[in-house]
Length: 331
Ligand code: DGY
View 1 (tube, protein in one colour):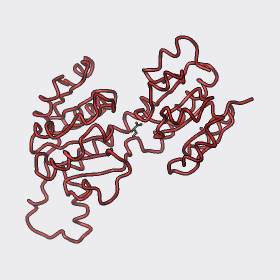
View 2: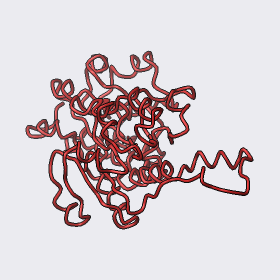
View 3: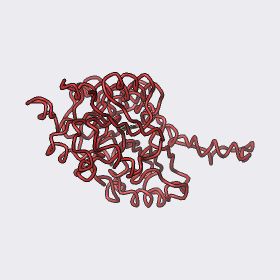
Protein backbone atom coordinates (compact mmCIF):
# COMPACT_ATOMS: atom_id res chain seq x y z
CA UNK A 1 0.00 0.00 0.00
CA UNK A 2 1.23 3.49 -0.84
CA UNK A 3 2.12 5.72 2.13
CA UNK A 4 -0.26 8.60 2.81
CA UNK A 5 0.92 12.16 2.29
CA UNK A 6 -0.83 15.37 3.29
CA UNK A 7 0.05 18.53 1.31
CA UNK A 8 -0.92 21.81 2.97
CA UNK A 9 -0.97 24.05 -0.12
CA UNK A 10 -1.57 23.85 -3.88
CA UNK A 11 1.52 22.70 -5.81
CA UNK A 12 2.22 22.45 -9.57
CA UNK A 13 0.31 19.63 -11.25
CA UNK A 14 3.26 17.63 -12.49
CA UNK A 15 4.89 17.78 -9.05
CA UNK A 16 1.64 16.50 -7.59
CA UNK A 17 1.53 13.76 -10.25
CA UNK A 18 5.09 12.76 -9.32
CA UNK A 19 4.21 12.41 -5.62
CA UNK A 20 0.98 10.58 -6.50
CA UNK A 21 2.96 7.91 -8.33
CA UNK A 22 4.63 7.05 -5.00
CA UNK A 23 2.05 7.99 -2.38
CA UNK A 24 -1.63 8.37 -1.75
CA UNK A 25 -2.07 12.13 -1.65
CA UNK A 26 -4.47 14.59 -0.02
CA UNK A 27 -4.06 18.29 -0.80
CA UNK A 28 -5.42 21.36 0.98
CA UNK A 29 -6.18 23.30 -2.20
CA UNK A 30 -6.79 26.73 -0.69
CA UNK A 31 -3.95 29.29 -0.37
CA UNK A 32 -5.11 30.04 3.18
CA UNK A 33 -3.92 28.18 6.28
CA UNK A 34 -5.25 24.67 6.88
CA UNK A 35 -8.03 24.75 9.50
CA UNK A 36 -7.32 22.83 12.70
CA UNK A 37 -10.29 20.56 12.07
CA UNK A 38 -8.85 19.52 8.66
CA UNK A 39 -5.46 18.81 10.24
CA UNK A 40 -7.20 16.65 12.84
CA UNK A 41 -8.83 14.69 10.04
CA UNK A 42 -5.79 14.28 7.78
CA UNK A 43 -2.78 13.90 10.07
CA UNK A 44 -3.58 10.66 11.95
CA UNK A 45 -2.86 8.56 8.82
CA UNK A 46 -0.16 10.72 7.23
CA UNK A 47 3.34 9.32 6.86
CA UNK A 48 4.53 12.34 4.87
CA UNK A 49 3.76 16.04 5.18
CA UNK A 50 4.58 18.59 2.45
CA UNK A 51 4.17 22.14 3.66
CA UNK A 52 5.73 25.58 3.78
CA UNK A 53 4.71 27.79 6.72
CA UNK A 54 2.73 25.34 8.87
CA UNK A 55 3.96 25.35 12.47
CA UNK A 56 5.09 21.78 13.12
CA UNK A 57 5.54 21.39 16.87
CA UNK A 58 4.83 18.78 19.52
CA UNK A 59 1.12 19.61 19.56
CA UNK A 60 0.79 19.06 15.81
CA UNK A 61 3.02 15.98 15.87
CA UNK A 62 0.75 14.45 18.53
CA UNK A 63 -1.93 14.43 15.81
CA UNK A 64 0.39 12.54 13.43
CA UNK A 65 1.60 9.35 15.11
CA UNK A 66 2.58 7.71 11.80
CA UNK A 67 4.57 10.66 10.42
CA UNK A 68 8.02 9.81 9.04
CA UNK A 69 8.97 12.91 7.06
CA UNK A 70 8.13 16.63 6.91
CA UNK A 71 9.29 18.31 3.71
CA UNK A 72 9.19 22.11 3.72
CA UNK A 73 8.96 24.12 0.51
CA UNK A 74 11.21 26.83 1.94
CA UNK A 75 14.82 27.37 2.81
CA UNK A 76 13.98 28.82 6.24
CA UNK A 77 12.60 26.29 8.70
CA UNK A 78 11.95 28.21 11.90
CA UNK A 79 8.33 26.95 11.67
CA UNK A 80 9.60 23.42 12.36
CA UNK A 81 10.38 22.40 15.94
CA UNK A 82 13.63 20.62 15.18
CA UNK A 83 14.20 19.31 18.72
CA UNK A 84 10.74 17.76 18.79
CA UNK A 85 11.23 16.20 15.34
CA UNK A 86 14.58 14.77 16.43
CA UNK A 87 13.11 13.39 19.64
CA UNK A 88 10.44 11.58 17.63
CA UNK A 89 12.99 10.55 14.96
CA UNK A 90 11.02 12.25 12.20
CA UNK A 91 13.09 13.42 9.22
CA UNK A 92 12.58 16.96 7.89
CA UNK A 93 13.92 18.57 4.73
CA UNK A 94 14.04 22.05 3.17
CA UNK A 95 14.94 23.63 -0.18
CA UNK A 96 18.26 25.48 -0.06
CA UNK A 97 20.05 26.60 -3.21
CA UNK A 98 17.31 26.87 -5.82
CA UNK A 99 16.00 30.22 -4.57
CA UNK A 100 19.25 32.09 -3.92
CA UNK A 101 19.38 34.21 -7.07
CA UNK A 102 15.65 34.95 -6.99
CA UNK A 103 15.74 36.17 -3.39
CA UNK A 104 18.89 38.18 -4.16
CA UNK A 105 17.04 39.90 -7.03
CA UNK A 106 14.25 40.92 -4.66
CA UNK A 107 16.72 42.19 -2.07
CA UNK A 108 18.43 44.31 -4.67
CA UNK A 109 15.03 45.56 -5.80
CA UNK A 110 14.30 46.65 -2.22
CA UNK A 111 17.68 48.41 -1.97
CA UNK A 112 17.04 50.35 -5.19
CA UNK A 113 13.38 51.05 -4.44
CA UNK A 114 14.16 52.42 -0.98
CA UNK A 115 17.23 54.43 -2.05
CA UNK A 116 15.54 56.04 -5.05
CA UNK A 117 12.07 56.16 -3.44
CA UNK A 118 10.53 54.35 -6.41
CA UNK A 119 7.14 53.30 -4.91
CA UNK A 120 6.69 56.69 -3.22
CA UNK A 121 7.42 58.58 -6.45
CA UNK A 122 5.29 56.22 -8.49
CA UNK A 123 2.35 57.26 -6.28
CA UNK A 124 3.39 60.89 -6.68
CA UNK A 125 3.15 60.66 -10.48
CA UNK A 126 -0.14 58.72 -10.43
CA UNK A 127 -1.63 61.27 -8.03
CA UNK A 128 -0.94 64.00 -10.63
CA UNK A 129 1.47 65.82 -8.31
CA UNK A 130 4.34 66.01 -10.82
CA UNK A 131 4.91 69.63 -11.77
CA UNK A 132 7.66 71.27 -13.81
CA UNK A 133 10.39 72.88 -11.75
CA UNK A 134 12.91 71.88 -9.13
CA UNK A 135 13.18 68.19 -8.32
CA UNK A 136 15.13 68.56 -5.12
CA UNK A 137 12.30 67.21 -3.01
CA UNK A 138 12.38 64.03 -5.13
CA UNK A 139 16.07 63.29 -4.61
CA UNK A 140 17.16 59.88 -3.45
CA UNK A 141 20.61 58.56 -2.61
CA UNK A 142 23.15 56.68 -4.72
CA UNK A 143 23.40 52.93 -4.53
CA UNK A 144 26.40 52.59 -6.82
CA UNK A 145 29.78 52.78 -5.07
CA UNK A 146 28.12 52.77 -1.64
CA UNK A 147 29.02 50.41 1.21
CA UNK A 148 26.87 47.30 1.51
CA UNK A 149 26.82 45.48 4.86
CA UNK A 150 25.50 41.93 4.84
CA UNK A 151 24.55 40.40 8.17
CA UNK A 152 24.45 36.63 7.62
CA UNK A 153 26.67 35.73 4.66
CA UNK A 154 25.09 32.54 3.37
CA UNK A 155 24.44 31.69 -0.27
CA UNK A 156 21.78 34.41 -0.62
CA UNK A 157 24.04 37.01 0.99
CA UNK A 158 26.80 36.09 -1.45
CA UNK A 159 24.41 36.41 -4.40
CA UNK A 160 23.44 39.91 -3.19
CA UNK A 161 27.12 40.79 -2.73
CA UNK A 162 27.92 39.69 -6.31
CA UNK A 163 25.24 42.01 -7.69
CA UNK A 164 26.56 44.82 -5.52
CA UNK A 165 30.19 44.32 -6.45
CA UNK A 166 29.97 43.64 -10.16
CA UNK A 167 26.84 45.59 -11.03
CA UNK A 168 27.18 48.59 -8.73
CA UNK A 169 30.86 48.84 -7.80
CA UNK A 170 29.98 48.65 -4.09
CA UNK A 171 32.28 47.87 -1.20
CA UNK A 172 31.14 44.79 0.73
CA UNK A 173 31.32 44.28 4.48
CA UNK A 174 29.94 41.17 6.10
CA UNK A 175 29.27 39.95 9.62
CA UNK A 176 29.04 36.20 9.95
CA UNK A 177 29.97 33.57 12.51
CA UNK A 178 32.46 32.05 10.07
CA UNK A 179 34.79 33.70 7.57
CA UNK A 180 34.02 33.24 3.86
CA UNK A 181 37.43 33.11 2.15
CA UNK A 182 35.89 32.61 -1.29
CA UNK A 183 33.66 35.68 -0.97
CA UNK A 184 36.65 37.62 0.30
CA UNK A 185 38.74 36.57 -2.71
CA UNK A 186 36.01 36.92 -5.34
CA UNK A 187 34.27 40.04 -4.07
CA UNK A 188 36.84 41.73 -1.88
CA UNK A 189 34.27 41.32 0.91
CA UNK A 190 35.64 42.30 4.32
CA UNK A 191 34.68 40.39 7.45
CA UNK A 192 33.96 42.60 10.47
CA UNK A 193 31.95 42.54 13.66
CA UNK A 194 28.31 43.54 13.67
CA UNK A 195 28.87 46.93 15.33
CA UNK A 196 31.49 47.99 12.80
CA UNK A 197 29.24 46.90 9.95
CA UNK A 198 26.28 48.85 11.32
CA UNK A 199 28.42 51.97 11.72
CA UNK A 200 30.03 51.81 8.27
CA UNK A 201 27.37 50.51 5.90
CA UNK A 202 25.14 52.67 3.71
CA UNK A 203 22.92 49.63 3.14
CA UNK A 204 22.41 47.04 5.87
CA UNK A 205 20.94 43.77 4.61
CA UNK A 206 19.81 41.22 7.18
CA UNK A 207 19.90 37.61 5.96
CA UNK A 208 20.30 35.50 9.10
CA UNK A 209 18.08 32.48 9.79
CA UNK A 210 15.70 32.94 12.73
CA UNK A 211 17.05 31.12 15.79
CA UNK A 212 17.02 31.85 19.52
CA UNK A 213 20.37 33.65 18.99
CA UNK A 214 19.12 35.88 16.15
CA UNK A 215 15.64 36.68 17.49
CA UNK A 216 15.36 40.50 17.74
CA UNK A 217 19.11 40.83 17.13
CA UNK A 218 18.47 44.23 15.51
CA UNK A 219 16.83 46.67 17.92
CA UNK A 220 17.08 50.27 19.15
CA UNK A 221 20.78 49.95 20.03
CA UNK A 222 21.66 48.60 16.59
CA UNK A 223 19.59 51.22 14.73
CA UNK A 224 21.31 53.93 16.79
CA UNK A 225 24.67 52.68 15.52
CA UNK A 226 23.62 52.97 11.86
CA UNK A 227 24.21 56.10 9.79
CA UNK A 228 21.23 58.49 9.66
CA UNK A 229 21.38 57.98 5.88
CA UNK A 230 21.34 54.16 6.17
CA UNK A 231 18.84 51.98 4.34
CA UNK A 232 17.87 48.80 6.19
CA UNK A 233 16.66 45.75 4.26
CA UNK A 234 15.24 42.58 5.80
CA UNK A 235 14.37 39.51 3.75
CA UNK A 236 15.14 36.90 6.40
CA UNK A 237 12.43 36.66 9.07
CA UNK A 238 10.57 39.53 10.69
CA UNK A 239 11.29 38.34 14.21
CA UNK A 240 15.01 38.96 13.77
CA UNK A 241 14.13 42.64 14.26
CA UNK A 242 12.49 44.55 17.10
CA UNK A 243 9.76 45.95 14.87
CA UNK A 244 8.69 48.66 17.32
CA UNK A 245 12.30 49.90 17.44
CA UNK A 246 12.39 49.88 13.64
CA UNK A 247 9.24 52.00 13.46
CA UNK A 248 10.78 54.48 15.93
CA UNK A 249 14.08 54.58 14.02
CA UNK A 250 12.26 55.33 10.76
CA UNK A 251 9.98 57.90 12.38
CA UNK A 252 12.79 59.77 14.19
CA UNK A 253 15.23 59.78 11.29
CA UNK A 254 17.66 57.50 13.16
CA UNK A 255 17.91 55.73 9.79
CA UNK A 256 16.74 56.91 6.39
CA UNK A 257 14.48 54.13 5.12
CA UNK A 258 13.73 50.42 5.05
CA UNK A 259 12.84 47.78 2.48
CA UNK A 260 11.03 44.84 4.06
CA UNK A 261 9.91 41.48 2.72
CA UNK A 262 9.22 40.01 6.16
CA UNK A 263 7.37 41.05 9.31
CA UNK A 264 7.06 39.88 12.90
CA UNK A 265 3.48 38.70 12.25
CA UNK A 266 2.42 37.93 8.69
CA UNK A 267 0.32 38.99 6.90
CA UNK A 268 0.35 42.60 8.16
CA UNK A 269 -2.72 44.77 7.72
CA UNK A 270 -2.87 48.06 5.80
CA UNK A 271 -2.96 50.02 9.06
CA UNK A 272 0.25 48.49 10.42
CA UNK A 273 2.58 51.27 11.73
CA UNK A 274 5.20 50.40 9.07
CA UNK A 275 2.59 50.96 6.36
CA UNK A 276 1.85 54.49 7.53
CA UNK A 277 5.46 55.63 7.06
CA UNK A 278 6.55 57.23 3.76
CA UNK A 279 10.11 55.89 4.09
CA UNK A 280 9.31 52.17 3.91
CA UNK A 281 9.02 49.85 0.93
CA UNK A 282 6.93 46.83 1.88
CA UNK A 283 6.32 43.59 -0.01
CA UNK A 284 4.37 40.53 1.18
CA UNK A 285 7.12 37.93 1.80
CA UNK A 286 7.78 37.32 -1.90
CA UNK A 287 11.55 36.70 -1.83
CA UNK A 288 11.31 33.42 -3.73
CA UNK A 289 8.04 34.18 -5.52
CA UNK A 290 8.66 33.63 -9.22
CA UNK A 291 6.90 30.82 -11.04
CA UNK A 292 10.14 29.06 -11.95
CA UNK A 293 11.70 29.24 -8.51
CA UNK A 294 8.53 28.22 -6.68
CA UNK A 295 8.25 25.31 -9.13
CA UNK A 296 11.87 24.29 -8.49
CA UNK A 297 11.32 24.50 -4.74
CA UNK A 298 8.16 22.37 -4.88
CA UNK A 299 9.94 19.77 -7.02
CA UNK A 300 12.96 19.58 -4.74
CA UNK A 301 10.73 19.24 -1.69
CA UNK A 302 8.68 16.52 -3.42
CA UNK A 303 11.80 14.56 -4.39
CA UNK A 304 13.08 14.65 -0.81
CA UNK A 305 9.66 13.67 0.54
CA UNK A 306 9.49 10.62 -1.73
CA UNK A 307 13.13 9.67 -1.07
CA UNK A 308 12.56 9.67 2.69
CA UNK A 309 9.31 7.71 2.39
CA UNK A 310 11.16 5.11 0.35
CA UNK A 311 13.94 4.84 2.94
CA UNK A 312 16.47 6.63 0.70
CA UNK A 313 18.59 9.58 1.81
CA UNK A 314 16.86 12.90 1.08
CA UNK A 315 19.24 15.36 -0.55
CA UNK A 316 18.41 18.29 1.76
CA UNK A 317 17.81 17.14 5.33
CA UNK A 318 17.76 19.88 7.98
CA UNK A 319 21.38 20.09 9.17
CA UNK A 320 20.29 19.38 12.77
CA UNK A 321 18.63 16.11 11.69
CA UNK A 322 21.46 14.68 9.58
CA UNK A 323 22.38 12.35 12.42
CA UNK A 324 19.03 10.58 11.93
CA UNK A 325 20.41 9.39 8.60
CA UNK A 326 23.38 7.69 10.23
CA UNK A 327 21.32 4.71 11.30
CA UNK A 328 18.76 4.37 8.52
CA UNK A 329 15.74 6.52 8.11
CA UNK A 330 13.17 6.40 10.87
CA UNK A 331 10.07 4.38 10.17
C1 DGY B 1 12.12 30.77 2.44
O1 DGY B 1 12.03 29.89 1.59
O2 DGY B 1 12.40 30.50 3.61
C2 DGY B 1 11.95 32.20 2.05
O3 DGY B 1 11.44 32.96 3.09
C3 DGY B 1 11.10 32.34 0.83
O4 DGY B 1 10.93 33.68 0.45
